[in-house]
Image (tube, rainbow, N blue to C red; front, side, top):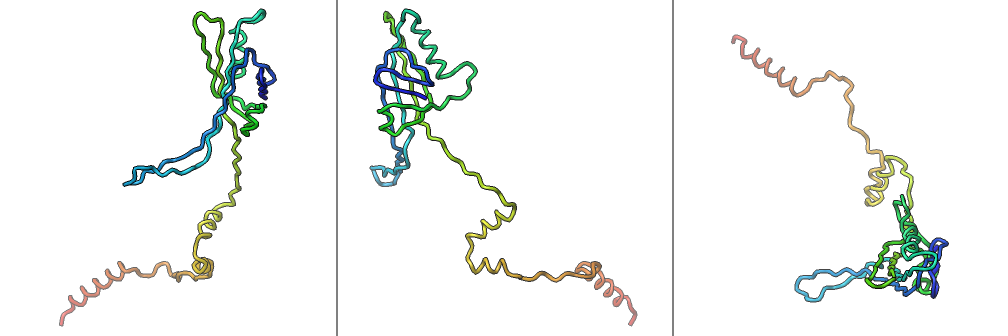
Length: 199
């Protein structure tokens, strides 16, 4: 859980150290431009929205008990602990983000900046809005499901024809019946005999 108010930011039950400077929330629409031959202006088509981005700025100073780098280690462990392979989804609580409809975020980016002759460490944190995607699985009923799905788009008259009893090709009972090749060979032998007969 992340909690943000006017002066503090709470992530995973830990109040982030340092002085809270600013919060920025950015949301973009997805718009595609189409190329049309002969037109200088490109027609635009709206396709959806990108996930919003929440940017926070903190300034860390050396304190009586912890240095600025020791304070930063607390933030670093929230971004990526040792051995962690995937970012964690956090709940965010803040009036600004609530007004934008953002309730869950991913810790996307962590940037630090030090300037010479200054005893401060500037920390920039970027969160991306997180929307879980629901995937519904259906059970496959076997080979017929593909066949039935293909038939669903057919003309109703043709469907009834496919479902009707159309009969079958006649089956030969005698598996040794003559073939065309055998008949041709017999015809050649018969001709040879006729030609060889004396007249």
